[in-house]
Length: 517
Ligand SMILES: Cc1cc2nc3c(=O)[nH]c(=O)nc-3n(C[C@H](O)[C@H](O)[C@H](O)COP(=O)(O)OP(=O)(O)OC[C@H]3O[C@@H](n4cnc5c(N)ncnc54)[C@H](O)[C@@H]3O)c2cc1C
Image (tube, rainbow, N blue to C red; front, side, top):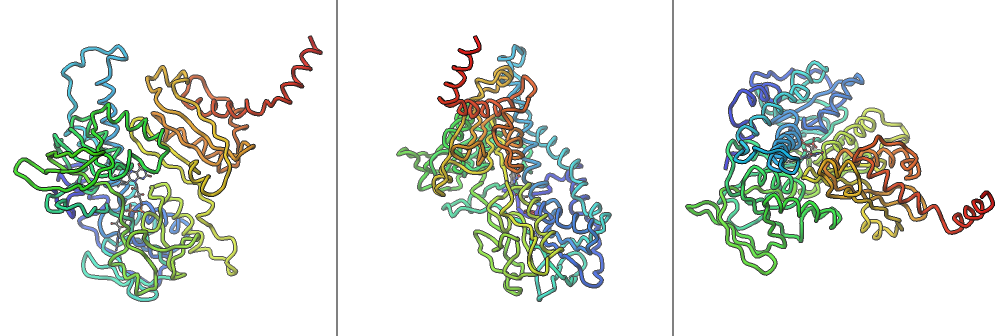
């Protein structure tokens, strides 16, 4: 296993050196703080970056503190590298399956994992200037590279660089994110394992890989690595994969992953790991069968733990929990009214776009408080979609059926399959469906799930509709270009439209046509 502290910037090549020069410049000199800041932001992941950039653009005096890499998880060890790796694995799968499109001559062609990882590092470095310390400085933000910690009611101490600095604040934002949670599996620590912080530093493919945890991160990477040629064992304590999603939706992804060679060991019990001469030995019981496997690497993706330690939160009366993170109200205000939080450190929605949206709420409420507490921005108004970038992808927004049932909300549900959409058939991407839940007896959209090659893109149409209060009636009356996979949503809307043709209306129409013949 690669050491956590160095791993994010390994290997030491031109791409990672460029990345470092942007996100953790080796020669960075922290500014000398002068006077009080309107806003001190701890953590320069998506939540912190967006908070600092907008606050500064509005004219506030802002300090941004980052202890490791500007850009946080998303740029360095999350969305960006994972989607880079997934893109390469998809390109390879298209070559592998080329014969179905009439492409021959690909026999014997093999994916080059090392080259795919290098491409990812190159593109990550290319994207990194936007999150860089120098850019933020040019935006007027005082960027401090070091570890931030509350030391008094209006002070944060930054340790790092050349000594420590004390910053005074009017308002502060905790944007310290989360890290990979580690399960208490016997033997795991001793055997060594990869997490999202180390897996993107690999330069050669592990021939045998165990992935522990079949959530979004585990599934995305299990499929990608299986496509590159690893024998992947996906070990999950619960039944099936992607436990949050509808079962029939997750099952489509599971079947696709299994076709790619992923071996799923779900309902896994009594998992234990031993280091042996031949690798890492896993024993686990799954569905009444005992498995005894040896792998070269183990990747753990069993959820996220909020970064709440070492921040001096007790000093400033900010309540937190080591599992759910910093406690916030709907205004994203912590139990200390001067201190706010945004992003993975305080939210069950651990997505980049959610961190971005929360940052905007923090700016409104921290910098423009109404004297009577009116007109505040609230998380209650957020409609947050999400997607898992397996192939096919799963995307969701709003309510699930089970959730609606729990809340006593009655639904009408409309589903349309991709294998009845011309473009999906022509693209060879006909697995999946779009499903929309509306409030019973109306066209008001309350939730949607899409399983499709481009579900993450398709869900946006429904998210906009929900946000704007547009129902399936408007979607049904909207013209889509033909042929597109987005037509699947129109077809769902048309299914709703047909229900408006009631027996009573049909009778009236029959009479009208009889009369007008
Ligand atoms: C493998 C993987 C894939 C993902 N893919 C997606 C995806 O496709 N789409 C999506 O929307 N989301 C994805 N995510 C989730 C996404 O990365 C996070 O939701 C997002 O990064 C959260 O941003 P944040 O600002 O809250 O936290 P982070 O990005 O974690 O940033 C927090 C920052 O705070 C710094 N910090 C912590 N403590 C201190 C301190 N005391 N002083 C100074 N600095 C400190 C950290 O070093 C870090 O840089 C993925 C995550 C992973 C792990």
